[in-house]
Image (cartoon, rainbow, N blue to C red; front, side):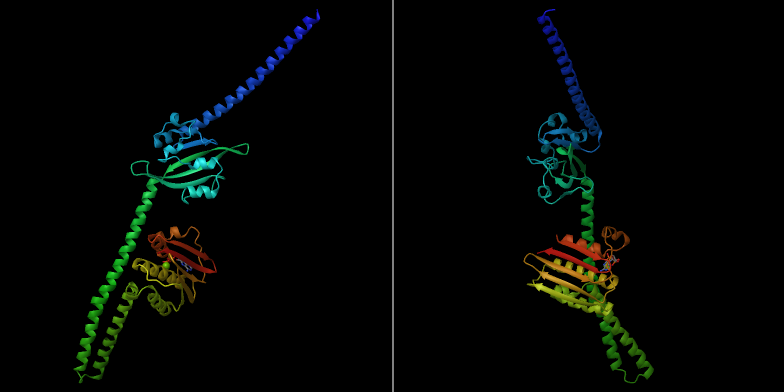
Length: 394
Ligand SMILES: Nc1ncnc2c1ncn2[C@@H]1O[C@H](COP(=O)(O)OP(=O)(O)O)[C@@H](O)[C@H]1O
Ligand SMILES: [Mg+2]
């Protein structure tokens, strides 16, 4: 064999080896592609049958998953949206990042919160995920409320996109709104009824009793010849009548203190402090700061009821002999806090369940604050005491 033949054979062997190698490498690569594609297909299949609307985006904000439920909800088909950055079209009338986009970008908590006007928060269940609840006016006939959660898709420690799941909570929101409306109506009607009963007691019952006392005065004055036992018995009736007038007056004032309507919040607090001293032997210290203003009648009434409830709670539950009320008048709001250093109570998850046990005091405080678009914060520590802070915008 000549040299040339040997070199030729060697070259052919080399080419075959290289070909075989390339074949295996390509095959391996193709297999991996297959694997990747098949996992995407499986994911799409799982999500496709998932009853809640779900979609996913990659880091470039291109849609990589869009399930059937979301097609129905948004009216946008998977074919239309896959590979595009049009996910916003499902929710908004103008282009803006959706929660999944923010998560895919690794946006900060502040950015996410600002983007949803403070209505987004970190998920308690999944690390790196956020959830939010918002109203989408362009969806459905009258708009819809959605609760949505977006979590990062992570591969080898890196965020490669995100997945978002939505839940229609419109019915729950409507039920809550109706309940709130109902509670407001009840609070309003209750105040009107109290006012009506207080006025009726004052205008009719008290007047009748006063007239009886007057008649009796006259009767006694014109009967100097009554026997001692007769005079004593009539005097006893006379005293009881006077006592009844006082009782009815006190009851009517408690229902709706006329001082509140006539003179405002601060004088009525003085009256309330006196009543609490008499009824529960509890001292109330009222501290006022800032420039005092006359508030709207609705605000004064609500603040009075809130302070009244908090102080009666302090007297009945906290087992204290004194409590404090602080009222701070600021430029655009009024702050009220009622504090006792009593037994305190465990309020974890309790306040929401109190009304069904017939305990309407704290729930009433929350309701009245909400009616005035205010804020309330109840801080209670076992063995240390309770403070109820309320802030009402003016
Ligand atoms: N200042 C307080 N100190 C201790 N416990 C309190 C205080 N305020 C409220 N609580 C607790 O919270 C419960 C609910 O209060 P509330 O809603 O006013 O209903 P009620 O006064 O009719 O019991 C009370 O029963 C009591 O256990
Ligand atoms: Mg109470």
